[in-house]
Structures are given as structure tokens and as C-alpha cells.
Image (cartoon, rainbow, N blue to C red; front, side, top):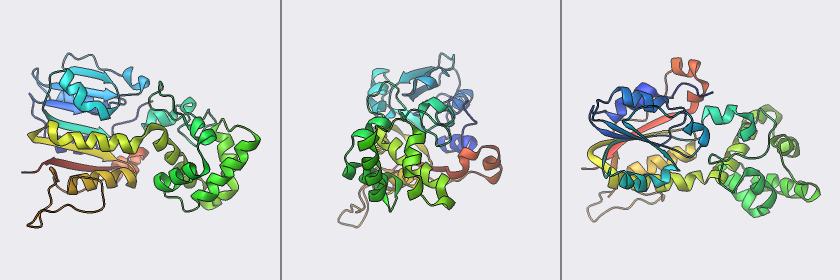
Length: 298
């Protein structure tokens, strides 16, 4: 089941939609944001929607103004060129894992269900969570858990996984949880396992690299008056988005010219937007959502 789209009205306001404009929904999912965008376009408007998850493809909307693309959003520029859409008036990206992916037990995204260690957003991809847990070195596992989960005991967790898989291959989410359970504080068990799963999922889907590739394309495809709206759900994503909007790259160091000005190709529009308490009550997924809006720098 696909839940209500997060920060729907706020993202539409951020896009500042022109009825005859060309827009991109870079993470189609259940199609909620796309439906709203289409409702604000006239007959000359166009919407290109992208999603790599075949479950999302089944939600496609029967509308001649919609172009549906089965791909990772890091290939956005390629598909815009293919469809003869060199510049767009707005781009929306609702990052992370969808509520449908979490709720579909067989996909292995959730800590709530016992399922195969999968976690692939693109179900045709070769790299799965099971491969990572059973094949990655101790150092690789520790780095993933530390970098993508910000877990201080990442090395201890990685060693436990290595020691356990020597005895028997780890195949399910429940097996992984049982192996790590006594290394996780009981008080924060749910939250810690969620972070462990998040770290593995990010590696499976190469989410940080895809986000970087996506963001670096924006300045060359956004119309001078166009808008970028990005909704993120954890600090790793939000940090990349914030840094790119502010500095034009992903390094901690800020590049400045002779006069001390930064050379970022895009700039923020307004402040960080969070969901209202009312939205969070109706849609728990919105709890950690953050929306950033940007446009081309002048």
C-alpha cells in the first residue's frame, strides 16, 4: 500500500508550477506527487516520472501528458535528452524507501517482518543485502555501518556478522537480528535495528552515489526560473542536499573565488520545511521528512 505523499502542498508550492511547464517527478513511487502535479498542468504541460522499482511502475497514470521511465533517477539527464526535453521548469525528488517497500514483507526492507535479506529497490539488480552480509569483508561491513548508520560500535557488529556467517550463511532479516541482538541496547532496540537496516539498504542501492549523480545534473537541466524540491528522511541525504545547494559540491571545504564568493550553481529558496504536527499524526512516515527548495543562482 502506498500512503499519502509527504509534504504534498509544500512541495507543490516550492515547485511554483506553471500550467504549461515541463516537470520531473524523480521518485514516482505511488504516484501521489505526480497526480498533484498533473492536476496543476494544462493540456500543454508535461511530466516525466522516473522510478526503478517495478512495483511503482504498476501505479502509472493514464495521462498523455505523462512520460513514465523505468530507471534510477541518476539517469535523469539521459532520459530528458531522449524525450527531447533539454530544460525543465521543476524537479521533485522524494528520497529514501517508500512506505510500500517497507510494508511489503518479502522485500526485506523492514525490521518488523522475517524475510529474505533483499532490500533491492531495483529488483533486477544483482547486489542484495544477503550478498553484502555474507560476502563483504569485516572492514567493508564496519565502514558501511559507521558511514551510513553512524553506529559507534560498527566494528563489533561487523565482527559478529563475520563470526556467525562462518558457521552458517545468513539468509533472513530475523537471522541477522538474532545474531546482533545482544550487541544492541534493549531500550533502543527498534531504533538501532532500523539504522542497521538503513545502512545495508543504502549500500545495496548505492543511494548516496545516485543522489550525488542526480544533484550534479540539476544546474544543466533546470530552466532559469525553475525550481528543485528535495524531500529527505535522514541526515546523510539531507547533508548532501544542503551542501550541494550551499556550495555546489559535496566536500566539506567551501570553494570561494578571489572576492570570497562561493560559486554554487544553485541557491536555496526559503528555509528548511518540515511537516506539520497534523500531517505527522496522519502519516507517520512524514515524521523525519525535510524539504529543501532551490533554484539556479543568478
